[in-house]
Image (tube, rainbow, N blue to C red; front, top):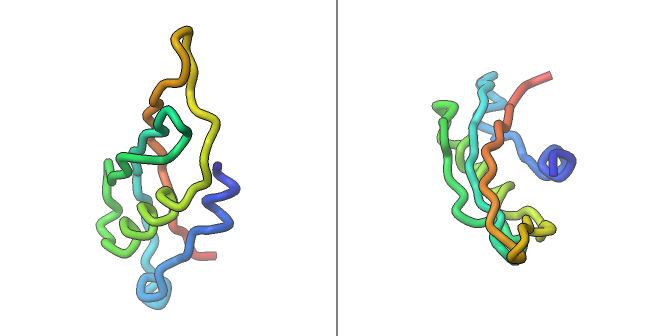
Length: 87
């Protein structure tokens, strides 16, 4: 998952030009079929561009192996920080 995010995240050009960095905390649910759903910002970086990019990349993730319990596939909620840093 982290490799997918690193390979697919695009640093917003306006933020890059202005030297802006930050972290976005994204919450999402992997449904019973393994799809990312209910994507939302749990804590913003203060940059709308960062927030929108974090949501875009999470929504574009490929299908996961869904969570399981004794009754079968279940939804699983995740909270994930995405850091935007300039080198």
